[in-house]
Amino acid sequence: MYKVILIFFILIQSIFSKEILISGAASLKEYLEKNINEYKKINPDLNISLNLGGSGTLKRQLEQGGNVDIIFLANREYMIDLKENNYIYNEDIILENSLALIKNKKSTLDKNIILAIGDPKYVPAGQYSIEVLNSLPLKDYSLVYGKDVRSVLSYVELGEADYGIVYLTDTKILKNSEVIQVFSKTLHKPIEYSIGISKDSKNKKEAEDFINFLKGKDWND
Image (cartoon, rainbow, N blue to C red; front, side):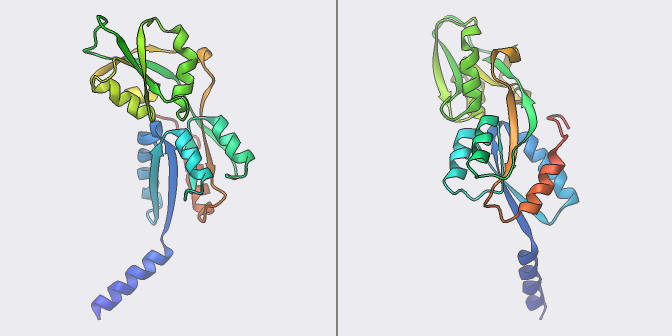
């Protein structure tokens, strides 16, 4: 009898439990994880899953029918395009960021310098990086591309690249590297993180509530 009641309780719980899936730019990892944990304290019945990656890749996944409730990208132009093409209901700017040049602490300048940036075809950080490359003091270097900004950071941290261009917020987790320069925002387009709800979301109310929770929360909140 006890087992029957337990199974019944589990079935009822699964029927009424809600889950939302968020596709977010890789650079949002710590920000989203922190705020998801906070939100679960006030809404423990809502399950929130994360799909992190390059903004261009996440955009294509949604356009190709990917199952997602919220999309949160590091390029507002991508979000505006999704809205204009009726993939999302809305797009709201939540955060802004800056670009930083990082260097592996053990790297020397007596060799061909390897500079890592996000692949500009898919990664907004890579697109912004291309805009500022001509301002770098580096002259003789080879470019390597990362699938997202965290891949770029990993290349530099592991010594696979001498330098890398990442978001300033990513530099908080550096261990083997250091910040050499924070680029002026006049050297690139505004880095704005925009968020929206998928038109195919079956949990629109829950998605709206979570976005409202995020509004006003900065990177350090």
